[in-house]
Image 1 (cartoon, rainbow, N blue to C red):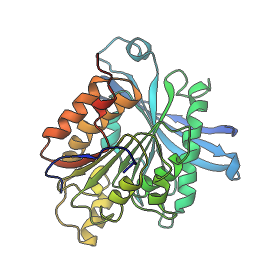
Image 2: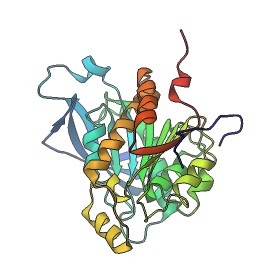
Image 3: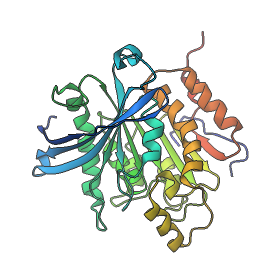
Image 4: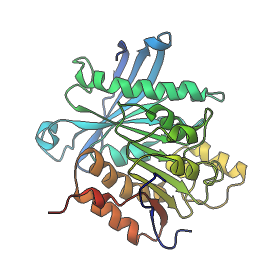
Length: 321
């Protein structure tokens, strides 16, 4: 806990880098859900600081739903905050459709890394790649050849699952390019994500699950939260929440069963819980929608499907009139 802050809890809680776009493949279809439809692009960048290493990622972005006639500019000034998403160990970056279909229609761009998906990833290399992608956001937003030109804000959120959840703390440490962090059952990678959390000061939201036996909360999620120095940090433990329910990879669920995990929610059930917290939390910190801070706090106070810790209520940041 940050010195001088009060710990709130529920009572039953037990560049400059040169960036070269080398590949862009525009998809010809849109998926529709909510205020916006979901557009999709595949991209590659080259990281010159690491020997022109290719950084591949999938891009999902909001476009007006067919049922509306508004243009993005008419709806939201054409600017959407960008989520740089880091996948879990051997959980492909393009197998988080549950999160894409939740966050993009709500007005967020997602850049999902598809590198380091093999059996022997470099944790340090992956963290460096997340940091590189965060640094690339501004360039993508202002490059007239980029599919995100004119619609991407320079506001950047790092979000990650498992191994990726640990990597984002390294990428966010002492990093002015990052505005917020959302970690889903984060793993204490090597070098330590717990140590890195001591240098992450931006608003931080961490999700855990009581049925997660892949990254046990007491050794991974909770120490990361406790070590965080963010003034605004929240820890949400989903009762019966699973490690693999954060994404939609069947291979991940098979690995859970092999590991002996018992119970645990499926993707659909768990995504519904994630959505009712991530969206108002992001809207509060990234879009300045102050009322969503009260919605977030009130939902926490009445939700029987979670237990939680919080450095301070979001509503505490709303000035009294």
